[in-house]
Amino acid sequence: MKIGDLNNRSTDIFKQIVETYLKTGSPVGSRAVSSLQDVSLSSASIRNTMADLENSGLLYSPHTSAGRMPTERGLRIFIDGLLEIGSLNTEEQEKIKAQCRAQNRSTEEMLTEATTMLSGLSHCASVVLAPKTNSSLKQIEFISISPEQALVVMVMDDGSVENRTIGLPLGTPPSALTQAGNYLNAQFGRIRGLEGRTLDAVKDTILDELKSQRAELDTLTKQVVKAGLATWSSGQKEGGTLIVRGRSNLLDDGSTLENLERIRQLFDDLESKEGMVKLLELTKDGDGVKIFIGAENRLFSLSGSSVVVSPYADDSGRIVGAVGVIGPTRLNYARVIPMVDFTAKVIGQIL
Image (cartoon, rainbow, N blue to C red; front, side, top):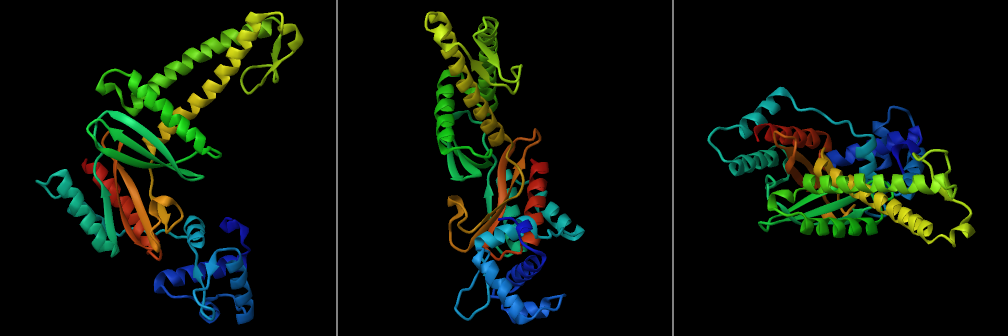
């Protein structure tokens, strides 16, 4: 469900309940909503709408006779569709810059100061992932944490471990993640020299293979199409499907059968490797403030906790770490999100 699936009355009441809950932390009743409503509605009408929102899984009642509170699903829909994100004033921005840019401090001391400052400003616990190392990759694994996200675990030669959360292309099956990990780990074994085992190096290796296999595929398909044994459904290769015809005539030609089987294998391999390239690009370029609410995925399943985290990059644009806060689900998201985002950008500028 998206916020656009609700009618105007339900949206207004839902928005007021969530905003009031985020301010007070208490269940919100129909009487409280009625006092906030711009449009005059009876308590009965408000209660009916609240009941509908509860049936939709956006609200719940902690006690039989109590008001309603947003579910984790409701909070997610509110944040994605209704939250009005604030902005830091000049004084707050300068304070963050000054705290991070103090002279004669190591990177570790700077990050410690930044997280202490975030904790104080947000009144929540803070978290930081230190800059990522330049060590060569030893092993990589993709773990599905939801239909839309995966955790990338990268083990380096020096024993350090880096974790990154990436968004997945729609419809990516868990089996594709397992296959990608197995294939990439095999590539690490093939690439000689520690300096070569980076995400970019592995991606370049796969792209070279794709280029070679596409050339082979072009040659083979031209042969079978020219021989009149197959045709492209759309009249051309791009966006078309190769249709084999006269299959009975192929039985007497072993070489043609071998070519067709090789074409099938190449199509499968190209599709698989193109998917792996996309995964590598997502792993490298993961960016933006991420918000995890309660138990919506296995990474942050602690009951009643939300995490707002943003990556920071070095001067080459490479994501090297992340900074954020952990707090109750009724965080002041409108204030915390720009605070985390700005701090991450300042840290990136310093690095």
